[in-house]
Length: 362
Image (tube, rainbow, N blue to C red; front, side):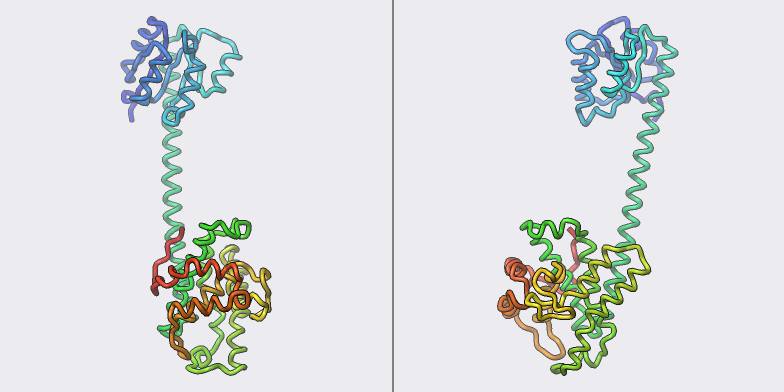
């Protein structure tokens, strides 16, 4: 934008000053002359200038009162204002600068000096706007790049988790479904404002992504045990139970090689505690009641519900109603009573979950 396209509002109650100012500036700028602060405010409702030259001493509404009103409005608060004044004392200048003026020009003003000061301030303002635009564009580029990296990271995690756990087509959807179930529970917790202190520091996107690693420890469990079409022996079940502690160890190894702490901390909690039980009879540590982290208590319901309604090599799928009844029957034993109540409130949403449902991070 050239200087000829810049618009200046010249506000002064003295007609001589308006005439001289207009003559001095109109060859370079688009100048509007106004003889009061009230007229300036009305004009600002229709048009926003690039700069305002504002007389300090005017009847009815002086420059101080006028600039307060200009700076109070979002639409005009960033417009540069230069005071025109016959005063030459530091107190009046300091007051004007504290109200948002960028400079003082003494009257009667020198036309060359007036033009040069305006040119300088318009240049500074233009550079400031360019810098803001550059920063906004740069932030947009960073956000877009970050989003791409996160999408890639999520795709890799999802694929890896499915390969680890899903060694057949039936199991492969477990990760996506449990992730969606946890999202439903999280949404209900936020809506009902439950566990506010516990979840206040959570990054919900990272929590949901971390669910993909809750069964990563199954990588060490042999296929003939995971896919056994009948009941496991006690020895085989002991092997399966180890996937929780193996999962924690795998995640700890990853943590040593990266500075990303929160995501992996969520993942470790989920991997190590989603088979704990409210009454202390779960594994691997036999945690009881609120000793079990909230994430573990949430994942316990998501994990069991999906196991119940899904077909496995050793069982047929239960109906949704049967799964809900089983979870309700385990209230206070296997599951956190409060979490069961929450599940009952949103169980219809669980039923609607379809394999490969795309997650919407809220």
